[in-house]
Image 1 (tube, each protein chain N blue to C red):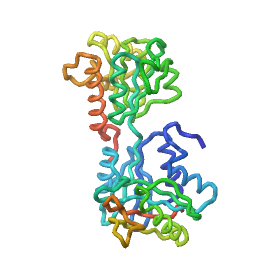
Image 2 (tube, rainbow over the protein chains, first blue to last red):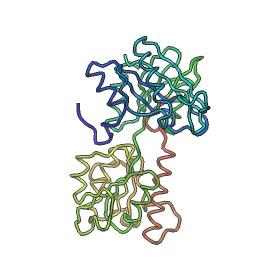
Image 3 (cartoon, chains in turn green, yellow):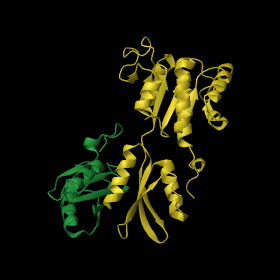
Image 4 (cartoon, helix red, strand yellow):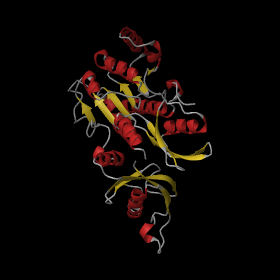
Length: 112
Length: 234
């Protein structure tokens, strides 16, 4: 595979996902498809996850990645895509909230 | 995501070509649309807009919800000539979000001392542009008004479809330049795309003011670039 001088391939989630696929790994791709308020990552941002829970990229400022990874492992098992929604953090939902006060919608799908 | 779609998308991104991944959020089916591919109807209009703006988002069309993820190469500016104007233009362009590369084979001009923290090539444009070709997401400003240095780069920029091509020099200088470019095989339509004299007419006098005029003209060219001229998108 020819390396591009235009992409930071070592940190590019979609390039990493393609590499994982070539290595025979099961992969899920999470994409921010909608944001409201002060969401930390723009629409279109990716987090890519393998079946062991390794991940690259981001869909938030680190607030909800853990939850997305957990869901992604399910998506890899089932093959069924999921739409996740994360909102403002409150005391009961601190684990999966956005402390910035924004809301995001994340589409999680299996690669292949 | 379809593995083939991912491979196609990454190949386009590696080649610095614009592409949009269109995902049907209802059934998860996806495909890659390249700039210039014809897509009909409401979806086609939304895709054309996403290519123009670079914004990703959801769109309702034909009774379905699609997510359009726009992958546009980052626009960049290549400057021929490590001259006084370039010293102002390079940091300004970088602040505006257009990474800059400067090419000038004259080693007395192209020194890191004059251009701290700027990608600088003290080489002939022929050599650099063969290694790192120009493309339609690149602006080219030729600022040496030396035919030996500028002409090859201008012809390469026109052939590559650079979104902006500007050339420094008086109208008289440009008239001679046009004759040379025609002789080297450029078409009249291509030559009409060259902004010369360079820069928006803001009455710029100092090198830094000329840099503002050039940068503004390049930004205007990028934000108003039409896909219609490429025979594209309904």
